[in-house]
Length: 177
Image (cartoon, rainbow, N blue to C red):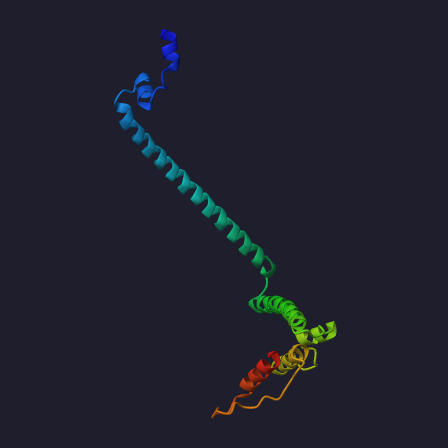
């Protein structure tokens, strides 16, 4: 019968386990101290991990900066400017090509030919003057995208004279609408 009672007794509580392990009353107080130590250790580990992450991020930024600077090593300041300008213009040309193609598709127009896109991007009009080249590129863009050009009249209540770029903007809005 004594065996049956022991087998049917409930499992020991946490306090009973602590007492049987020799902890006695002090074990309850010791547990929070261990918890504080564990929190301290976790905080320390998190700080160390954050520091490792910051160092890795900084190393990656340094590597990227070095990779970007590599093509310019040994060049004069003027050569660096020219090379970077060529890179930026190349990127802009690619984006402009994409904008023109997408816009033409969005308005239901036939996408411009490769030759007209090249003329738009490169400004191949034979003009060496930068201002004239920009004007030619602008005109090529307008021809490629805004196929419906209408003369826009001044709004009736406007008591002012529009500047040329404002007239262009108004015409552009009319072509988009």
